[in-house]
Length: 196
Image 1 (tube, one colour):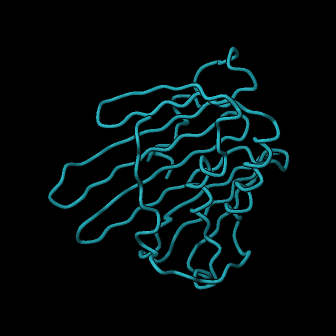
Image 2: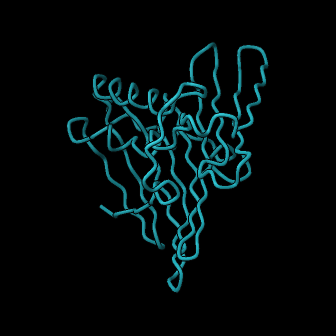
Image 3: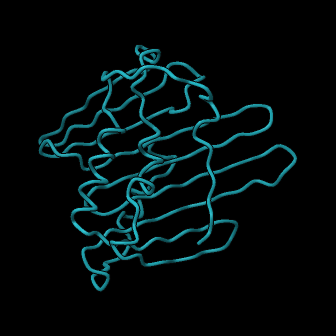
């Protein structure tokens, strides 16, 4: 399987900040998702594109480590005591749909924007944008999760004096490997920069 590397901790090395519960907890939500997906025996079809190479793989439920699969979402959690007051929160409601948007007000924060969309009080979509830059390394990461369908990760990495790398991971959930119905996201609703 193609190995895709992304350093979430580059901007927060050594950070032992205490947790709080001010914002929606990606850590708690995705820990619960991992437990639920394991119990449901969900299989996945994973497609990885990197440097012009594509690899597709169907994985049986017993071979999927959901803690590992969803760790990139858990690591995007914003609930640190020192970050309280550093995100602006907007809530928009339209009928049964409620969207919570978080926007970083401090440029040093790695998670720049996040959207959590609820429908009938259930999470329907989660989208997260992260960016990091220093003298040697810069990266951008876009995450999109739909609990009923799957998730997508799109990223870019640039290391000083090295080539730029783009990658994309698409994962489709299924209770049966014979019931794939295509990509989990419509073409206009993919995790892309136009949503942020």
